[in-house]
Image (cartoon, rainbow, N blue to C red; front, side, top):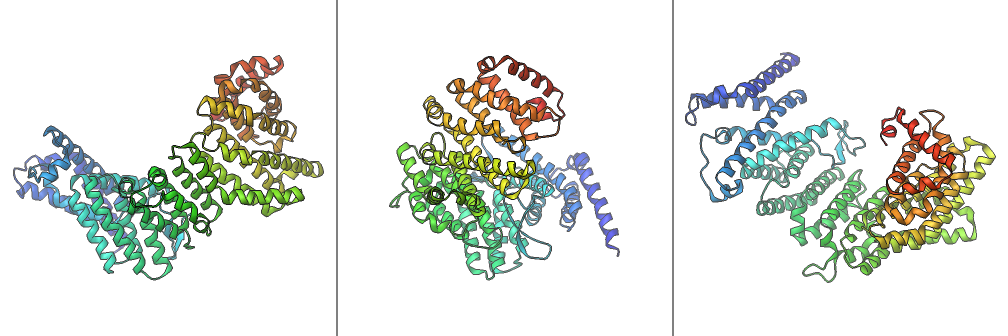
Length: 598
């Protein structure tokens, strides 16, 4: 028989059944007077056909069925919740009491169908966005490089459907999942795909069960998965199991917060995975660590029962060893995760001590470079040194954003002057290259790398201003001790450098300074506008295409001035004020909507 004919017939059947049930299900439901009567059997037969069609290995057919299953489970859940509330109790209370459900409710009439549907949904679960390890077309385990938006949309639909199914009968969902997991542990039907779909389904129902059920269920799942990881041989097998462990634990922060020893075991396991060089494992380990650190941060900075000191202190002792195998982008995620923990520390002096301990490695590398540059400035232009500088600045930026209000002041104090010196040195080097080779020199590999370091510096300065200006004290500290020197270096560079080497991030930094520091920055605002105004307008008013980032950021700056520091507009020369008005009128006509809207 031609496979295409079968597929076409099944497609037609799936459309027929889903449309019939969507619009005419009451025709069969209304005559039902008792379970297993003729009308009920007819209803079940139709649904059995639809479940069987859903099991067919055809994505298009399954998506048609999935849309209807999502609609059905949502309706059943809504009816179930309404009935529970009308009895003055929630669904979990009904379940615990063991109250006999009404045999004529839709949920009861479709119990057998819903159980089969749970099996189908679990076995066909698609990959969520957090999972980075996939099987490629050659059957090898690799790190995913692009996101499949269609699969993510399908995951959302399946996730919601499975959550509704779990609410409708938690016990059945748990039994199906644990039976499938036992099969994987015992080697019955073991495959990467079977384990993946099961674990993605387990992760997707987080929050759909009571805390008590969640604890029992998750302890069993994690123990089995850890045992499976130890048992399996081969790098690919271990990588698949490891990615599933990381995904599942990352989905259940409520459980982790309530069980310290388990949380500690999980985090230490993530640290082990950070040394696993199989593609994608380290990325998932760092991403999961960040997720757990953000959701359970307080647990890591306070002393837990039975521990000699808070976990974060233990982490600091082992930090050089833990991060020894991480790539730069993974390192940035790791530092952001630890900074998220430290944000929960309520004693400022202790937080400063912990931040200093966290930044020991990057600070030592930074000091080493600065000492070498003091003897020979050319060290700063070495390609490897520039990469290291970008890496260190980016690490500081991630920590600054995650550490919480005013938590980065001491660290910025240790870097600030050196950062400005490096910025000034790179500006001079770029000017030399442009003087020698003209504007085309800005396209060279050396100038691009130097500009990358400058951009990262500006982003760090912006993050510092944004996160250290939560109160008047913080705003005054920045305005007095940091801003004058910062503006002197950054604005002089922006005003004098060629258009193709002006950094758009300068405009964002100024907008952030004005919006966050408010009155504290008012005296400096006219000078800011004076430095960037005319030269930026010359760049962006020639046409509607050149310098797109400068365009958007320039009008963000104007918006911030208008909102927080409008007096500054009246303290600039009158010809510049006319330029402001003209530029806003010009922007109304801009083809880029984000420019016109801003």
